[in-house]
Image (tube, one colour):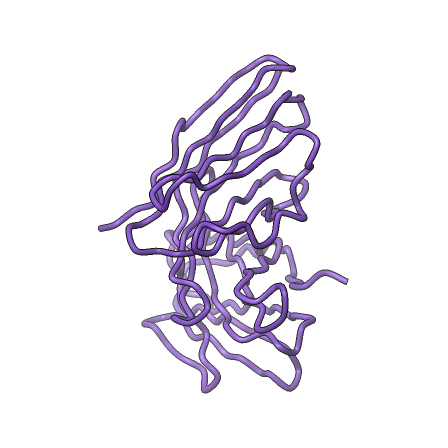
Length: 113
Length: 115
């Protein structure tokens, strides 16, 4: 089983739509969680960290459910510029893999006018 | 804005040749990662250093790949001999490590084509 699983999509939504991405992780000792964004032919860039209580950054809301080992990202009022691949990232929390980051395969989003 | 710097940006080489990719992590970062990305496999971890010591290189083909950190400002990834299946984008990333609960910052990547 992969450390991090994501629905690959693609998600195709109109401008202004709300879209949600989900991600599950297998290691219950994971300690840190992030969403990254990757544009075509570019490097991954941090979108936001995910905190236990959930957190919001403008139109983006991240949620963490440790009991279910589940992370989500909600994008409200989608813009054309949100078109990208969104990567779910989990940091291992103990043992020989402490500090190692595991990336999901990414969810592709296309926002159309 | 501090950035991770990777060189070269692009590399085209023939099968059998040696390839060396370089990375300058962000000053003060103590963890360095090398990832390879292809359409088929996504991001694969090749090697991981903390305080210049290699912690995990289990994702790296040992017979042809090697990763080193000669000093805190330079990480290298070498392929010898290169093969067409090594064609991919190679990313270096650096971070502040577990204690700071810090995300990684990626370089622009080296796009490698082996013919």
